[in-house]
Amino acid sequence: MNITSIACPSARSAGRVFVLSAFGFLGTVSAAHAQTDTITDHRATEVYSPVPPVVTPGTTCGDAPSDATILFDGKNLDSWVSVNDGSPAKWVVADGILTVDKKGGNIQTKASFSNYQLHIEYRIPSNITGSDQARGNSGIFLASTGKGDDGYELQVLDNYNNKTYVNGQVGSIYKQSIPLANACRKPGEWQSFDVIWTAPVFHTDGSLASPARVTVLHNGVLVQNNFELKGGTRYVGKPFYKAHGPSPIKLQAHGDKSEPISYRNIWVRPL
Ligand code: MG
Image (cartoon, rainbow, N blue to C red):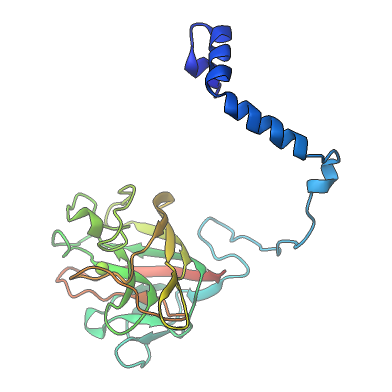
C-alpha cells in the first residue's frame, strides 16, 4: 500500500510532500534507526539453530502427523476414563467412531497436557432433533479442571439453521467468546476442530500469572483468534480462574434429549 496515494490520490508528488511534512518525525526516527544498523553482511542475520524437528505430515489433511499422540484412532478408548469415577470410559466405539453415551457421563484423557495442538472430528447425526442448546450439544474441554463441566469448554452444537445465544453456539468459548464465523456443515457430515491451546500459568500462591489463550479453526475456518480466556467456562455466573497444572482433555456428555453425536480421529501434539 502506498501511503502517498492514500494521502493525495490525485496529486502524487504534492501528496508526497504533504506526507513527509506532516509525519516528519517518522523520517527522523527512520534515519536514526538506519544510522545504528551497521550490519552489512546478510549472513549476520541468518540463524542455523535450533533446527526444527522433522515431522512427517499425515497423508491427507487432518491425518495425524508423525509426532502426534493419538487419543482415539477408531479402535478403543484405552486413552480415556470416565470423569465421574476414573473407571474405563464407557462411550460406544463401533465402525471406527466414538459415540457419546449420555448416561455414561463425561470422559477425559488419562494423560494430562499443558500447551498443545489438538485435532478432533465430530458428526451431528443426520436425524438430529431439538433446537437451541438442545440440539447436538457436546463440548471439548481444553483443560478439565475437575468433575462435571469444570474446565474450559469449546462448544460443540448443531448450529446449522439452529439459533442460540451466540456466545454459546458451536465454536464459542462457552459464554466468553463469540466465534468469528458460523462454519457449520450439515448434520450427517463430518466436521473438524483444530485448536492451539496455551494453558494458563499460576504463581505458587495460586494467583494468575498469565491467562489461557486459544486459537480455533472450525472446518478450516478461523473462529477463535488467540482469544484470552477470563477463567473457566460456566453455565451460570462469571468466569474466574482457579490454579491448576497440566490437565486432561475432556468430552462432554450433555444431558439434552437429542440424538448423541460422534467423534473420530482425535490427536494432540504437546507444545
Ligand atoms: Mg456443550
